[in-house]
Amino acid sequence: MKYKHLFFDLDHTLWDFDANARVTLQQLHIDLNLVDKGIHDFDIFYKNYLVHNEKLWERYRNGYIRQEELRLKRMWLTLLDFKIADEALARQLSELFLQLLPTRTILFPDTKEVLQYLTDKGYQLHLITNGFELVQHGKLKSSGINHFFKEVITSEGSNSLKPKKEIFVYALNKAGATAEESLMIGDSIEVDIAGAIAAGIDQVHVNHINAEQSLIPTYTVTELKQLKEFL
Image 1 (cartoon, helix red, strand yellow):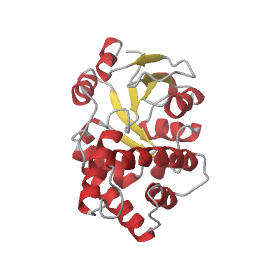
Image 2 (cartoon, one colour):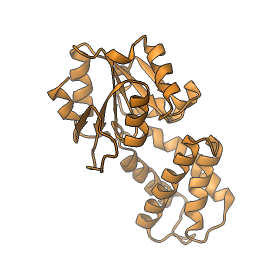
Image 3 (cartoon, helix red, strand yellow):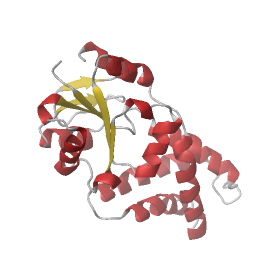
Image 4 (cartoon, helix red, strand yellow):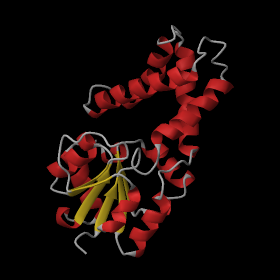
């Protein structure tokens, strides 16, 4: 085998963040009576949340904001879109969201089957994720895929963030792997693929949404089951 160590991203690659976030926010929309507070259209609320979340994550990755600011501000800004300037509600939403989100279990199609296939073939599987330690481990456990991974490297645990080269070097050292025998598998060209290229690691772009590619990865798949074609 050309590769011995496979490093997966979690959110948007294996664990369907958007679907899980939607279910969680939908529950909170009901539980916290957000309709009575002026949020009548849940779909708009959810879409606005995704926009704010993505922008804030980019700022977090670039070191402009801290973890606590990211968690609160994505809710605060979404509420402001509905002219609700209620910091207590934003904090409540943030705390409950972080409690409930890791319990969600929606994975992309064929995730468990592909992970089992790769394990059976003798690959060592690991994770490199920009998520937070407790949240990401909660997601893995709830969705029943934690046992597949030997090492789980989070941005919080490694004190670095993709696409920085340092988190990939940290992951290689933790796994006892070399760049030449490793493969990074992730959905984001800017974060997973660019970071792996900088660290000298081959990459697979899991392009679930057929996004335009600004870089040419080593491999591209549109479904996880296509990994079986070359691994």
